[in-house]
Image 1 (tube, rainbow, N blue to C red):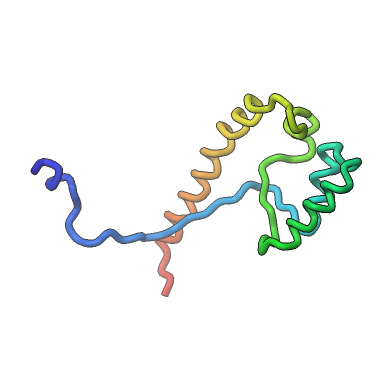
Image 2: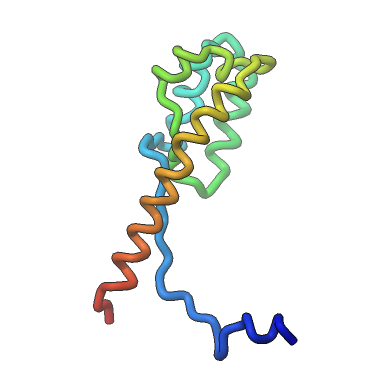
Length: 117
């Protein structure tokens, strides 16, 4: 019975939804060229062509990422198949995730307080 006292009365309501995306945008059509260039994999032409076909068949138009070319150069293991990059990636996630969460929450609170009709 104690659990019942903790529940709210009435139906739940979503008051607003806020979204946030990482700051860097790449167009899907250009992404294979970008990816293979920054990971120094342009010599893998067969794989690049396969990746291009995959990218063309998706409904995705833009790809938002946190990583920049400079970050990949700073942490070269991120761009390699067998590279030990977990620690570098975790450090980036730890820094970026709260920022994106805050941005989404601020947008939701603004939308909730607005007078949309």
